[in-house]
Amino acid sequence: MKLAIVGSGYVGLVTGTCFAEVGHQVICVDNDLKKVHQLQDGQIPIYEPGLEELVKKNVAAGRLSFTASIGDAVQQSLVIFIAVPTPPQPDGSVDLSFVEGVAREIAVHIKEYRIVVDKSTVPVKTGEKVAQTINRYNPGADIDVVSNPEFLREGSAVEDLMKPDRIVIGVSSERAVAPMKEIYQPFHAPILVTDLNSAELIKHAANSFLALKISYINAVAAICEASGANVERVADGMGADKRIGRAFLNAGVGYGGSCFPKDISAFIRISRELGYPFHLLEEVEKINANQKERFLKKVREALWILRNKKIGVLGLAFKGNTDDVRSSVAIEIVKQLLAEGAEVRAFDPKAMEKAESLVPGAKMVEKAEEVADGADALLVLTEWTDFKSLPWLAIKKRMLSPLLFDGRNLLNPEEMRSLGFTYTSIGR
Ligand code: UDX
Image: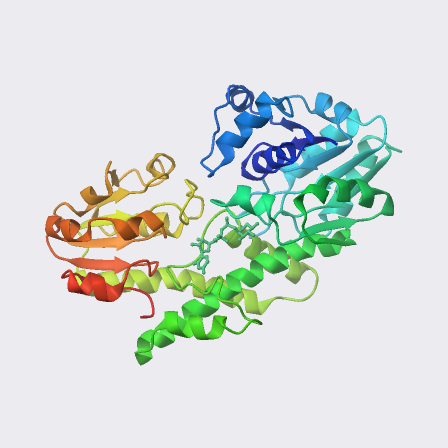
């Protein structure tokens, strides 16, 4: 099928590429001409495992192309996906101006039946507004608006898209169902067809629930610390119950990224507007913010004064396997350390370039081991699997004092202690 994807960021690029991979004819649109040219040359602006090969393969096969022209894309494609950013605003709501702008641009080019699909994460009732907008700028346009939320995790986005748990399709008319099912048929996943508003709510409700699981286990971790229990064993025991599940019960410095913080505050905001203030989610946010503070408190307690202390930081990305530093808790912690006068040397396998401008006071080093040189303490802030196999004994020898704070429960406590580290982690 001929498909257009408007917005070639994480979601748009991965979605478009995977659609091409299963045989659809895909045009990806972006208003950033430099990015379009880069993509046409096979340069991928983000790090996402497996993506580069797939882009190259599908461009070469003639199934994937890039353009800056929405007009061309709308003309050539039956289904147009909107995958533009919906950034957070200071009051917790999301800025929907890119979605609205694209809806207007699409509207003027529609000449025959088109399905306009919202992939961007948006508050409930946005689809209705997209339909109204298209009709305002092109009265009588023959369209159906569909909500088709994405559930991609950065770092495993290609895999998540190729092997989804489920596909959610929210429609306002039966006519859009068959083409939407046809698009997703090659992915062999259960397809859930709902009304437009329910599909939009599924996304916010699902992400908020996952964030709730993380805050829940982080709160349990605090109780484990106070009582001498081990949060990992508690999570194993809880997670073995199929109704609960072990996933997203990993205690740490808190959740970050471009989705959870934004989606939870947007959901809180929209629920308040709809007359049901979602206080439970307000608590989820509070626990998350507090988690970072609790971690910093442990560092302060050990070092007493942070001013002029050399602190090595492993991990800057908001989680492992990505170069994304948006709303990264690691970055927030580094900022705080710098604000308190510490000297920070940091390493991340992929995210240093993007992190540099956010924490200009931190020195980025080329090899993980170098963060330890003369360090008073070392902090693990991102769950990169690579960190597990670092030469920890050699790292310890490079440090001034062997204080190791593992903010992701990534390392084995007994092993680290047997190497001579004074090891502290979360809830164990
Ligand atoms: C999330 C959702 O998982 C995905 O379905 C949605 O489409 C987009 O938002 P993503 O933001 O890429 O994906 O990352 P995710 O893997 O969910 O992790 C989010 C944050 O939670 C990270 O900072 C991670 O470190 C943290 N996390 C995750 C924990 O602290 N503990 C866990 O057990 C799991």
